[in-house]
Amino acid sequence: MRVNAIARGFFLTEQNKRLLIHEDDSWMKRTQDILKHTPAKRLGTSEGLLGTLMWLLDDEASGFVTAIPVPVDGGSWAYAGM
Image: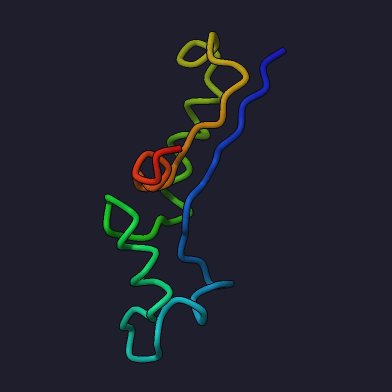
């Protein structure tokens, strides 16, 4: 039995767009603060999770991987020293 998880970082979605972007498409202060601690200097997209999910579902590619969270976060986990 394999148990893994995707530990996602900050992703831009329709649900949180109003909290992260001004109407003129500029970043809000909170988003600027998030990006300061994200080495990729951008927010994630839902499509960005797909590759990790497909890898985890492929028993040949990741069949020996178990009991880990896979960070998909633009590097913020490593940057924070976790």
